Each structure stands twice: as C-alpha cells, then as structure tokens.
Image (cartoon, rainbow, N blue to C red):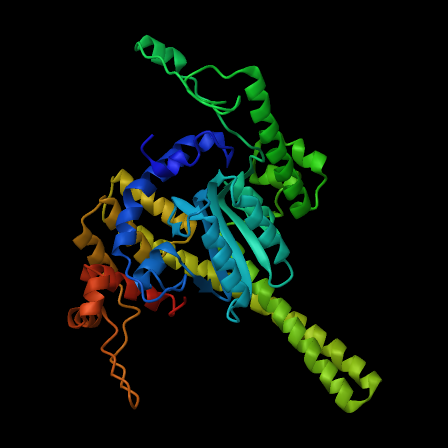
Length: 458
C-alpha cells in the first residue's frame, strides 16, 4: 500500500459508507498526488493557523467564507484526523472544522454557522471529540447542517450535532455503523513459496496479521472493539437528534433518502442548498430583528413608566416586526433564487463553448449543484485539463461586471489601479511578491475576479 492517506485506514475501525468505496479511494488517490504540490506552493505570512499558508494557500486549503452573515464550513470528501486542511471535494480534516467553528463563534460578522456536507465518511479517531465540541456550542450561535448531497457515517455524526439538518432532494444520510476488515494472504504467500515466521514476545503481539488466517478468539476481540465504538456512535446520534438509542440502532447502518430521513427523524427538512442557505440567513435576520424590537420597547416602557402604554407599544412593535421580518425573508429568498439562476446561467455559458465534452459536463453539473461561482468553475475546468486554459480565462474575462475605475489614494496611501483584468495584470507584473505567490498571472486575475464578485467576503 503506497498511498499514505489510505494506509491510515488499514486494519483500523472506520466510519464510512461501503457503497461509496470507489469515491473514497479516488478521493484519497487525488489527495496523494496533488496535496504535496499545493503545500509547496503555499507561502506563509506568519505562524497563525489562518495566515501561515499565505493568501492563496489559505483560500485553497483553509477557506473561511461568510455569505449573508452565515459562515460556510465545508465537510467534504474523506474526513481525516491529523489533517489541518480542507481540500476541495476530496478531503476535510477534523482539526480544520474545529478551528473554523471556533473562529466563527468568536467572529462578530458571523450570525450563523452552516456545515455544508458531501462526504462518504472517514476516520473514527477525532470524530466523536469534534462532534461533542459542536454539540456543546449549541446556543451560542444558530448552527445548521446541509447534506448536499451526502452525509454518511462520520459526516452524519457531524451533521447531527447541528441545530437542524436539511437534506437535498436527491441526497442521503445515515450509515450509522462502524467497519473494519482483515485480509488473509497466507494462501497467496504459500503459492509463491514463501513462509512468514514471527519471532515475538506476548501471546497476542501478532494478532490480526495478514499472513495467517484470523483465529476465532482474535476475531471476537476485534468485534468487541467495533461493538463498543458502535455504541458510542449510536448514543451520540441519539443525543444529538433527541432520539431513543434503540431507534438509532434499529437503522442497522442503512442509508436513507431525503424523504426516508425525514420519516425516521434523522433529518428535519428537504431543500436545495442555495435556497436552504437563504432561508437560514433570513431566519437569523428575523431572530435579530425580533430581539432588537423587544429591547427598544422595553427601554421605552422604563422611560415612560406607563405600563398600559408600554403594553400597547410592545404589541404594535411585535406586529410590525413580524411583518417586516416576513417581507425581508421573502425578499432574501427571491434574491437568492435570482442570484442562483444568474450563477447557473454563467456556468452554462462556459459549458456551451464545449458541446459534447463529457468532462466539462460533469464539472459543470457538479458546480451548479454545490454553489460554485462561474470563476471557480472556470478554474476547475482549467485544472482538470478538460479545456484549454486560455479559452476558459477568456470566458472569465468577458464578464466585466465587477470592473471599477482607478481609486484615488487617501493621504499616506498608494492609489489603486483600475479593478479590471488589465489592472490586476499590471499589479502582478509590478510586484515580485505577487509573482512568487501566484506563478501564473491568470491565477491572480481569477482570484481578484472571485473576490470582487463576492464583495470582498472572507
């Protein structure tokens, strides 16, 4: 076994969905071939968790994105312990999720936290500690999990710790179980004429080795360990979802569709990611407005010292607050739907340039589902090799809706050039630091476009 990430699961209990074995292996293979290069390219600016990889490295490997007051915490790919990164759709570390949650809880700009999940599961080690940490944070800020598309096994334990869980219509959750395996290669070794002799001390020192059949007593001890971990998993989900442990155990590690998950109370509602996120942001806004209205009316009643008038004012304020909140909610949902349609239209425009290209179609379909921007989709197309980089960059640069004129300098500052692809190119050419961080000017332009489209969001 040459893949060091896959080796972490050898002969160890795991929280994974077996039917996603191919995705599991492919994700760890991609991690093995790509991560080293990414880390080598990252140039840090300090020893802090969020700065040590530099701007580009942090954006790629430790994202911190806030949209409409909601912190988006990706829980994607294979979930790993001792892995302080978030690497696209391939892998996410428990340490990264922990750090991202803590930062969001302390960040005044963050009003709510969303765990955006699409994962076949991952390692046992580190999972339950993280889940307990999320559960203990309930009440500090609203937290909601979104299975878009999947939240299986280790990913489900994380999602279950949020206040609510929303599942995509075509998504799934569950696989509440623990698995390990033993490989017996003794017959193959014998056929090749080899014989393995162990020299050891301690009766059980070589239990479970692959060079001999697994004895019944050793299998029984491994089963005891699996059963104990299974009990922890079941009790954790029961606590998080306010279910009876027997009901959780009765799922027998099955996976469930969105409608089935609602029926057995493993999830709360069904919804598309962008619309569900917009609803979450609107719910947070409604809560904030209601709190603010009540606080103002209470102060007014104290100043006036007329209880009967105060009661009337509070009732009037609550009625108006509810009406305003409803209108704001409806507008937020409508705006989110329009924004998503515009985003999908831009992504479709990229795909239209390459009719019949199956790889482009696959990337575009995934991008429309997971909320990627057109700029991010273009970068994925470039990285995949499905299309020519120059053609994709040309498509990005045709969209100049974010361009702005040159910004005059304030006293003591340097004037900023025009915020256009040509302006960003000039910035890159004039800066040795930018050239060191972004070996290609196209990468810097793509980053600036993405920042401009998102309003400078972290």
